[in-house]
Image 1: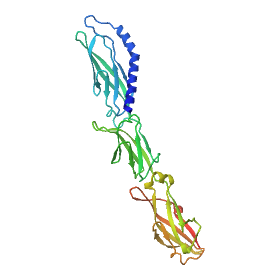
Image 2: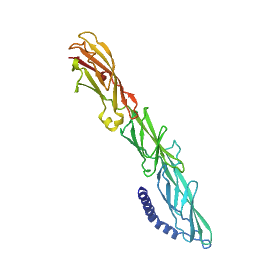
Image 3: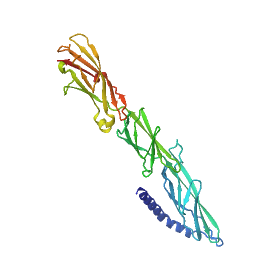
Image 4: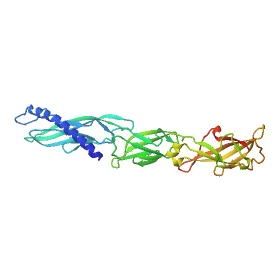
Length: 341
């Protein structure tokens, strides 16, 4: 449907141009001097109607018009890469007109009209012109819009205005995908998507690249509950029910867009006890069983009013590949203090 629409617009433009120039051609022909012995046509020039700017990978086309009186066997031919289709259309592939370091340039083309006059004499009329070929704009979108999240499954879409009906090939590192969408899980500080116009016959055409900044996912928040109720720093912790359950709460927007990359675990907890006015004493470091920490035995000698300090360690994010990625959180955000009651 897109090809038919664009083709119709081009045809309409050609015929509008022909309608404008046709009376000029007729007038010009009526003023030509004809030699009585050869009937040679003098001073006539072909008209070329073509696009001024062509997107790299899109074929260049030029429609030509020529009116010959007393001639026959009209034939169109092109030089170099310019090909003639029928007796009125030039076409040229543009995929290799730009070197890797070029973004645009002016391309000149030339061809010839040949026809036979009455008496068998062959006449050649030069046809020439120029157009500008340029690399297309590459429009890229992702779930996070401005950047990609590090070691997360980012869905990226690439669009190339002017080549909507052509098949693309996307390349990131050694990974290649055919189409306009690709999943990227970058580990560095940036990621580059190389965009090609897929052409199995003549070789893929490099259109350009799009670079993304890579950032860490938003930091999660830590929360803790005791016997099913949320407790905050400074709250009482019953010595007889000293069971704490820690949870890492992901950023809501990140969890919504990247559910497979927003799972977290807490590895260990180091516990300190401060009795009265004495200095804090380390009780021990404990592996968390399902993010749970049981301190009933550790606090059996504690008295009401004593303070317990818990510092969480080994907080990781489990991404879509199942990899445990360390999460850097400040000491204050991963440390909790309670009063034994």
